[in-house]
Length: 149
Image (cartoon, rainbow, N blue to C red; front, side, top):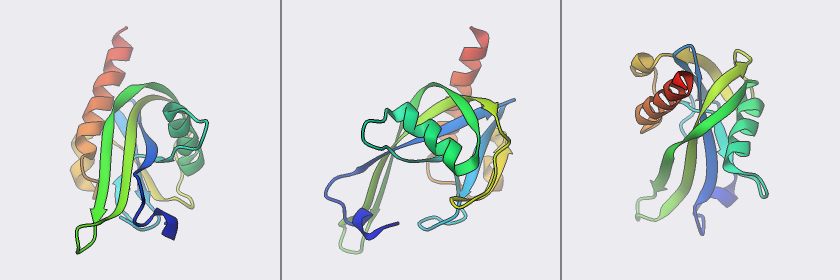
């Protein structure tokens, strides 16, 4: 993480994606601090001129080599890390999306130490970011609604 992301003047906008495939979701263990080795959804900062959904799909492709189709917005996740004085050291607003898997099994790389496909009931078997089970539940429900239609 670059120094410019520390003690920001305003929150950084990011997008993530919960890819659903045969009832399992794709998780990636972060390769870098903060939270190195913790499993979360692929995602990253939104670039100027890019929609949230475009950013989520781009990050998915870049981080783990998977292609997916966005089904919809699941919800926002706020990550605020404070220093000892209570100042916001880091602040991200991550817009989580649900997606249907199209291709690719997922691969570890520069940004992902490890990639796993886990069922929602298996999330407790790995360390995860705060709030991840709720986002996964929302994404799985959204994917299920799209299968029914």
